[in-house]
Image (cartoon, rainbow, N blue to C red):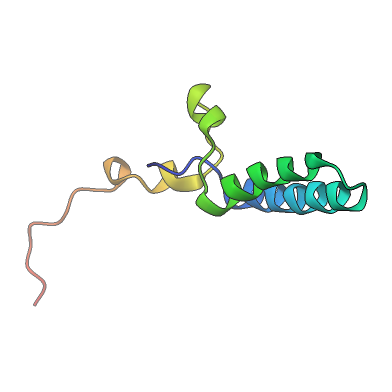
Amino acid sequence: MKHNVGSYDAAYRAVLGFALIAVGHYYRTWWGLVGLVPLLTAAISFCPLYCLFHFDTSPQDDYDDRHLPPPSKTKNV
């Protein structure tokens, strides 16, 4: 599974998840369980909705092997 959630996005999701859980706990409602969704997506760095809409906030594509120069054919001595 390819990661599509970047580090800043994951941090925002974690803060939002903890806030939703805290508010749900404070008001004693089941809405606090909604906070588990952003926490889970932040923990595994994958969001199914991002995949559905082809959205990616991770910097993984910057380091793709296709963009690296070809290996040198000379031997290091």
